[in-house]
Image 1 (tube, rainbow, N blue to C red):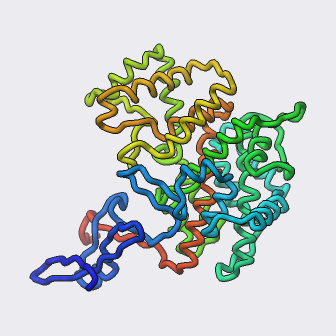
Image 2: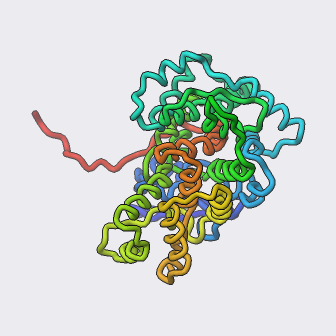
Image 3: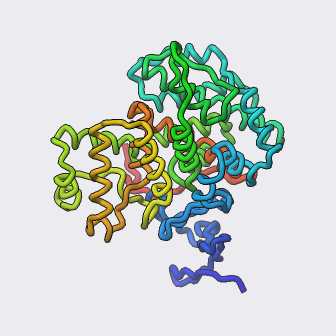
Length: 421
């Protein structure tokens, strides 16, 4: 007999089945709650609500586990390229050599964008936030590719997926180069996906550019670690927009806007802004660690702890090593990065932070790497979006293939009752 949960209300007992995932996660199936009891649940932020069944990502915050399609991020970062991970997330399995070669070939063929998109880019003032620009350019792809995607057609879906994977790095790099006042670059199809991203972003017209293996490796790891993270704010946005049968480009554009927020993708930007504020105040890390421990002090230590991971962020363990390698390779003398290393050292040795498991998270280290590479602070979230793209695609595709119903949360009304004019 399957397990169930009983609810007593209004002198009646109602029974709801339990559902269980492959990692023994359990949930109460309340699809019939409102129709059978007249009640709804109240769950601000949906912290206790499962909106879907998904086979893409497993996350255990208590034990610090993150797996894509069953593979640990540790193994993927150690043995796979970002484009292999993208294939895994979207299609469910790691590609063999033939599949990977074809995937790369298709992406390279489609690595062009309509020249008229430059006109849209030019219409933005230089001071426009890169995430607003990227969201608009992504949405604009719909105008240049107006045909609707038949989700039941493998060829149609593959074409849309390839198109987005191919063109998105170009749009991201153009956004970066507009911020920096540099001429726009085009894709270099003779190099790998990640090397191409580095070249499009950093190559100057009057000089040769060949990214160091350390930089390419760090970017590869950063993109993999940001590729998927279960039902976060932006991914949930992509799924709920797509549930109206909005297209892939429109849904991803909405996801970019959701990622923009400082409580989500903007966290690594907030880390650097905090470090800059500490520097302006004299750079005393001990002072700010004391402020962070003072409950009456409004100061918040950004980049430490995580709302999901109750232990060490597993992504941070991987990217900390990459950050150390990048800083060593580039030999950068930056007081901001010195402050970051000081905060890190104190947090990892301070009983207050150790007891509360307030360790540096992936946002802390990714911000350090991006700053070391010369990426402007306001571009950090664009880099996050580059990594998250295959995760958004895989979640959108799963939602549409499962023919999930349109998202439509309920509410508890607290306004005025009926009033006469």
